[in-house]
Length: 346
Image 1 (cartoon, one colour):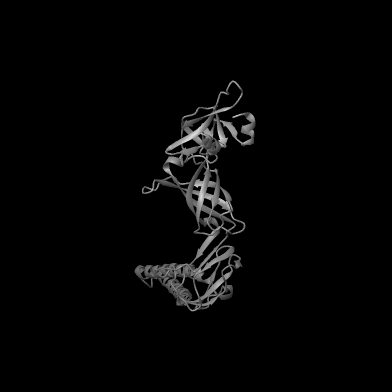
Image 2 (image 1 turned 90 degrees about the horizontal axis):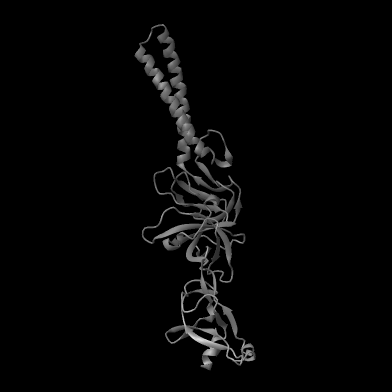
């Protein structure tokens, strides 16, 4: 072909170059909460929900009321506290009396020591009752700090954030965490401004993935949008069944598009391997062969000459360029655009 023919046919030529190929590891992952920005709220008491005070999507402050629960556990705790205070007072009086009598040898040492032991036990029981009641006093209606016996308990937000989930309705019976049964999560409170992506990286790629590496995230809900973040943790063990390591990526999510439990395609930036590479557009399929057109030395009259050559490439690596296994060498000029036209001229 003359140079004018090549130009008019829009045939482009590029040399085979050595460059890093395979500069990303693509794997699957799942969106989760940032563990430091989420709280799963359970009821510490067993009882019946009488009122819901927070709805999904609502922002709440730390300590804000979420629900009220009518629970005999609360009444029992304050009743135990009142009884422990009375028992301590009675044991203290008896101990003081026995101490005075023992001083004048009016009672035996055994009776005196028994009174002392009862006093110490009553004191320990009061301390235990106070600690138990303190758990419920923080949830007393209106934040009351008195020791009045009450059946009401207010479930409060442990952190500031958005009510992301609510799994309870008025009138529902709930199991308390301290009741010995299986407690159900009632509220989920958290922030979605930053989320984690948990990805599984195969053992063969693990050595190339580094902490701080850039990541690109895509989800099916937003096929034309790319979310970016960084690798912030790589687990120290492999899953023995899948031979993968868990990699955690931190991804900003200001628009809250990424939702926990979404599946994602995760591309992790890694250092590529320098190898001779071809433009992917230069690779053609002819029957069962993979070929490229190589520019040969020109003819004496100045016309350009192109030779079809069978090559082997690894098409699973790289994006715009693929690594060469054999067939062409570094520096050889190949047709990157217009090879299909040359095939038709054979």
